[in-house]
Length: 212
Image 1 (cartoon, rainbow, N blue to C red):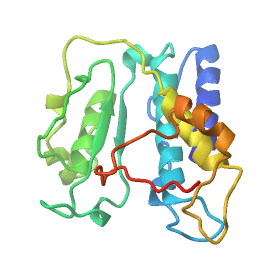
Image 2 (spheres, rainbow, N blue to C red):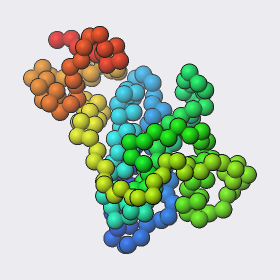
Image 3 (cartoon, rainbow, N blue to C red):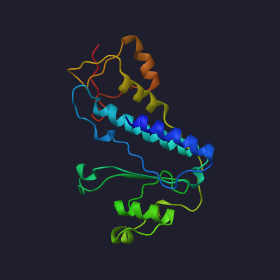
Image 4 (cartoon, rainbow, N blue to C red):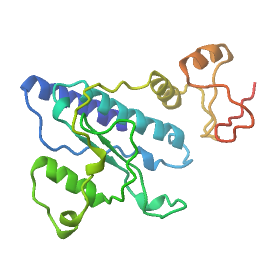
């Protein structure tokens, strides 16, 4: 599971801090965003994506609170980007760039490719291009700023609570893998933790059916 990978990465990060240095390039794969659909006996898509998201947050939080953060950059891109077409193009996807030198709260809509991200990493590491594709790619210059912001990232308490509930839910129906159940006496507790929240029945983006 991605959280296990994240925990392993963080344990290695702690070791690097004790030793005083860290590898200049590390690659980490968090695979659960692919999900397993509604396959019986598997986590639901919502649980798997939540697990992936919180694992991502755990890694970023740990790095931003480490001694290496002032000289660290994190680049994240989705696998199989062609599998999510939108109204513009089937190859579009989101990507994240995280660093003290990255503009915060900024959406960079520059036309980049995966090779652009690779070229950006090469420039930071002082490496020569590996092919004509990354050599000709546009580096992600527009995402960067000259003055660093060293404020660390804090993973959301609500995200932690949601992950714990949807992956460790104690009451499940194997014939209905997308249904979740909770004891009525836990309602206030789960609402306070942010696992569930009250929404308008007109809000079709966040509707959930609750039976008592």
